[in-house]
Image 1 (tube, rainbow, N blue to C red):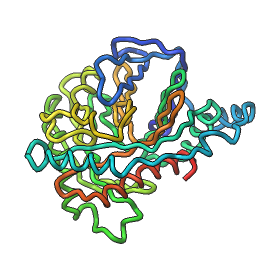
Image 2: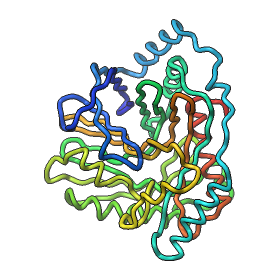
Image 3: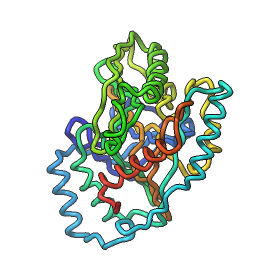
Length: 341
């Protein structure tokens, strides 16, 4: 994890534990649809490194373990099917037309039949050292399965009694800038953003008085997002794992209103093997916590790699515009990881 200019590396083997708020940093990275049964993980050692120290570590490793021209760097990515996303759009807008929901966020994946070797993983992390500070670099892997990426979104952070989070919803690819008005003037994008703001404004009252600032435009290397910041001075220290359960998923990745549930999205085509995409990805200490939203990443298993993207669908959403946005989000991941584009 990169946070405040420092890198935290936690070494395995990892052991499952039941409680957060302990002296050791525990990692919590459940699946998007299932948090209750997933353990917290403790490693055997923790290290804090500067960017230069980590760079030297990675370069020395790659010198000793040359990265072959290899399967992932030359992978042929199978792009998601337009028909899958068209069906997602129809299902969601059908529910909107029936006044069952106001918004939902489907996801789709580009896939490659290659996994990630240790040397490739080192090279990917080396590439991520150059990610702008507006992104949180994160990763976790065990055995043949893992995730690695750089997300702009936090579910929450907690430090010195202050709970902070954000509404990050509403997107414009920089390549579309000349053809589109500012996000702050875009009725569809502002509606999508407002639904997240409204949800968080109500949800955060559980922990104290809610202050907000925004919306504003967050600029990333290839995208613009609408962003509103929230902070709450907590009456007492929250249980971090319970905080995850209360906040995930916001309508930025789930459904508005929350009462409509989000389990039904499992049946939408194109998101098979989703696992941790858009899920909470958290680091818990005794008095501090950082929980990311695991977007803009590469996931892999023993026989497949996946790059996902999602978009908020409201009544005014159009297939062609959303399809372009989904592609630009996946492209931003390949670029920042140094993968073949």
